[in-house]
Image (cartoon, rainbow, N blue to C red; front, side, top):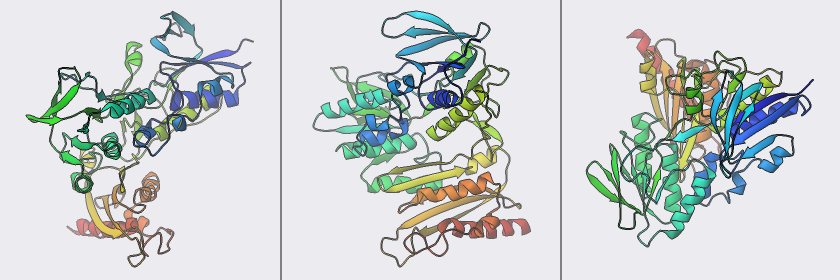
Length: 461
């Protein structure tokens, strides 16, 4: 009997995790695997690009988990610099174009995995495509940005458009290169994944580092000089001089192929799948990574979250299922961490506006503590904000801003959210304690105690 053919579109985290897992379960005689990647790299960490640009990581080789040659050595027919331009779901085939030769051809499949990722948001504004304006989605993007930084003139002025995770991380990287950095943020405060009161703490810390952050600054144009290169960014009627511009506005699902093929998309533009990561309504197509929407376990609705952690898990589940095994991806609670210099930023679950959007009533509790016992050398401040459901006390979300190990404390809250715990149950957790690592009452537990009081007061109101 001839081997079945699995075709994978996309050679990064989700796609190659799926291909690799499928190959572990079925050999070449049972399953032929063909993977298409339009770029020059596979299985790399896009999340590491700001740290490569900032000099913390040697890169780009350090960011590559597995090379094309390593995949091919495992009997995966990986075709680089080859873009899939069409999916014929009725005929079970994909159209691919070799970007080097221009040759186009069709390849049939028995099973298909769509892992096309996400694309950076790039507004259609004057000057947006000028030399010196950079996105940071791929390793090629990172290399191009480094080359621009090396050629920058003596003034060395940089503007970052957007103040989300990529924006603040790139601001730090540019600061390390000796640039005067301005961050233009259209929101009320940096880090819109936090509530504004917590975002204000990030703003204050960025100011203290010498990063100029301008809020409520919607960019309207990029100005260029006589040489055609970027020279300024216009926002709110003000020009901000720039020798380099980095876009950190965010990403959106890359689902044009799926849309053209008539596959189902969700409210955020991502592919819709079931728990096995199979595309809804199709028994021969799976999808994973940044091109899909996932279930938010706290809000009870789908969202688009572009993170490598999810993409790799999706790939494992898909690879198991396409090869005859079994796996599911039940959903997420929205955990993410970041940093700008030594300031750590973390969040999980719902913000206040998220809770309101799904009709939840809630109370909040915000506390200030330290990451170590107050008397232990090096103890530094940490702010924890907690949301709990009105009356029931169910934990809804946690945000943490601080130093000295602040970010990873959010993992305790992520587990509690996944388990559906109440803030009162959270106060009883047996967390590790020693003066170098935590006060007697860990900051997360202090916030939970305050949230319990808020829930009780709300119940008597």
